Length: 400
Image (tube, rainbow, N blue to C red):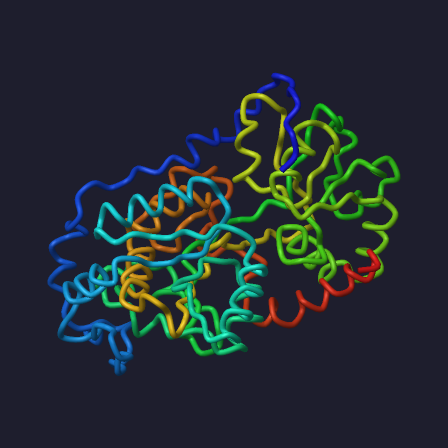
């Protein structure tokens, strides 16, 4: 993380403060997720439910024993290990909320999901199983977790009526993104900004408004990007640019404009906020929000660039051979519940796919509109085929 220099005072009122965006109201009380939830008995009763499956040894059944049996079994295990985004609030607020609700400790592992995959590969080769649940982007889940057969189905583990209720979702059911329709559940969907522009560095006449404007020689050396050769915000933009404008156009842009790269979201936000670069591609609202009211940052928009929707660290996966299988199942039910997505949405700065949670912590401009025409960068085929191909092309441009 780079050192922060003093920043100028111009105000951009369109951004929310970091404190407001990330504030998490931790629920008090250890046994009141709702009396109706305690009485849940059968996961096969709703239209979106699946046929009951046999629970692994030591796992509370999802049928007649119901919710109270699962909570008791999770409390006996005493702990759940969850990996997720590196946001500081996630490390503290999610464990606090989960412990307050159920009396179960959470060990939270925040960081890069590809590094997590390397750790899991080494551990599993040695017969070690240390993590229960992952909250990630789609890339590692689709390209590593699923092919390696590391996951247990989440769909059959969902037993809360409010989680399985089709009416709670604009898409008609909990949203499973992998071909099996069982393993990876997406709980957020938000409009993903291309990045941000510092209007004290670039004048309005210098800010491109179309993709063609990206080729303006005046922008040379003034653009930074999250590295488009690896999974992340830079590749989201770079891959859509590649798909919509072609390889020659995309290659010319990155090479001719001498785009600077980083693999640190904090650094890309710092670079554009401190004026090191006028445009920060892949800079995210989560990290840019800390400069609200102090730096003139605006969302970077291109009129001919299709609006992107993504989901942050909202792909929920549940590992097989988990050290705490009941606590894992309890956690995935909670994180998909109204309370869970509201708590986590504030931290990850994303809009829930549930229709009963209003994302008041977000800029309304970033909330997808029903029936909108968007480029979904969490689509399974896009991620596993098109996007990975493009990442390799960008890596070759850098000689890596």
